[in-house]
Length: 361
Image: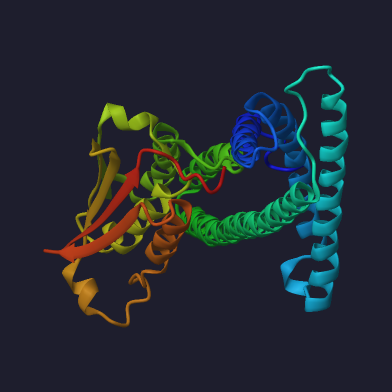
């Protein structure tokens, strides 16, 4: 449907514009002494109201001959033919309307029609139709640009969604692999602990399955998943592993991507606590600041393990890079993930906007 016909406000504005042009034609007829003001208005206003709908047909003429496939002969034939036909049709209506209004029995009704008036009306009709063709060409060009932008945006959403799923698939098997390794190690000297860890692992995965198809979850649910994971790891490390969570209550309801904290805590244990003879504390803090959720995770690191370049358990940063890429895609660059090592303490800082990402909705 034509944009003007689909919007009542545009249609009313269009009709007002036609009425204004009709008043100008009436003024010309009065100045040329072809009619009185009453007769000129009676003739011009209905004539231009009708011609407005003929001008709208230029939209469909332009769409029938896309700009990318146009050739000069086609333009002259199609556009020229449409212009001549529309102008002649309008001139015919003007003659019939003038003849009909002259029969009202009113002295002022009707216009003194002459060849000069007919030629003038025909030329006005041609000029207005050509202007309508040009205006509709511009309108269609803008419509095509908007359609291309929408298609590009949809393609970007699909690409980001695919990349996000890929990043998730890299994180989840990584956790399962390490958990099974921990259970395998425990079975050799503590079967009861291995059994307890297996039960905790089952509970953990039951919860992850429940949220696997959700794009965001409250931070409270994410922390609950971390508690299940820590219950598994504390069976393995005992008193060597300690945690300290400082969670601002207002942050618990903030929507976050699922399964992003657990890999960070896992890395804190694997690359930090694991190498410390006396163990250590994994600290997690969440605060709300400037319409953003700030999350900080820190853990002590053994200095000697950092100096050993052949240590196979030394981190390569792949998990952090994956998490950073995941957040960049999910939040369209509005979130940040950074990390640093200072004074044998490894810190990870995450900044998340309170509004969830829109591109995945």
